[in-house]
Length: 270
Length: 295
Image (cartoon, rainbow over the protein chains, first blue to last red):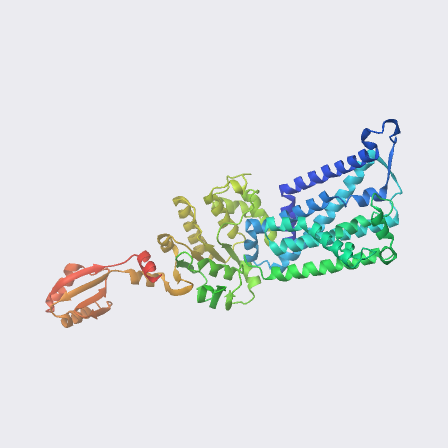
């Protein structure tokens, strides 16, 4: 499996889509930082009333780097492109014919997916903080609590990447994989909202099953998040055990999607 | 004698359609096995099962007399259906990536590219290659790590006459020098006839016949049919004069295989033994005609 892992990394680093991804990531991070600056400086309409220095909590900038739609869209699209390269070119047949087992190929691709996602998330956070520092002053600092939630957010992003990977390996076709992954967030969110309304949940428990919403929840009460999100985060049933709750949700997601996609992949013919 | 490939009752069905039906095949080390069949006969489906790309519905496969197929497939090189290339990478980069994935040394890449006449392609990405160039790169990928057994599905597809000749010579060279075993499917029966040592004919998923190149030559050799004034004397005369010839009587006619008996000599032998030739005709068939008949 080690040689397959090396091959996967080599394919990513020789892929033109990596340059495109990094460029878009950097561009989006800059635009997000600049738009935040414009928002808090009143879009130049406040005149003398505009603050001289824009101050924002460091927590909001760092954890907020993972809440934009473009972050998830880019991730889902590029994971599909990288992982499915062997299937679209047919080189998966060469690998299997040369004695590479389907299991080794599957887990090598999964490991690379996790590594790439982690790098993507960290680079995105770094670039976002870097660009934001040009326009804003940070308050609050990098406390232990911020670190804890940053780690949790990374784990939730890795879980989301696992879900994307699961659908990628189930379809093994580029267009369906991208469509499903792009629509996934919206579909799950709608389902969660409906369930919460049906059960009349004050804590809006089921919305924590929508990982992208859950990531937004970690921004906490000092963010731009609405009162509802602030309320959710501070609700005793979830707030106090939010971290544990989300860790369990993520583990269940990972176990479910890896198990199903692994079992289906074992029997795939090409 | 070691067997490189052994299949027993290998079958593949998709729903209600059986594409490979109870195929039992043995390929010995050093064979160049020509696999012949019409379009849709089951050649590619069979090869894909041997390579693990698809799973048999029933039956068994052994490679190098071993049932641990994953391990033994490391000794195989293959080109099945279209060449699988990374389109944005050059020929050299394609081979390098496969070397990394297969965990093998890449020191022979330049020699391989020279052998398939792709050593001057430089940085040209594979998506800009012609069909023939892609096919040759696919063959180069199959040759990585000096495989002991090569499974090639229509390897000369898209190649010009020089390319076909080059691949033929390469196959013969590898077979003679390194005892590489080949399983080759092709529609170019004449081409296959120049290199194959054994043949398997498959039709509608069934392995109709296997024969060696010597057996094929015998079956395609000229057949002489004569009518004489006294067939019993003619048969006796033939058997006495030509001990190696098998004579068959079919009613009023006598047939025998012959590539070397001259017409004048035959007439003289018959008349000396009291059987005069009334009618004579010579028939023979090409390997192509033989295969088409069997398919």
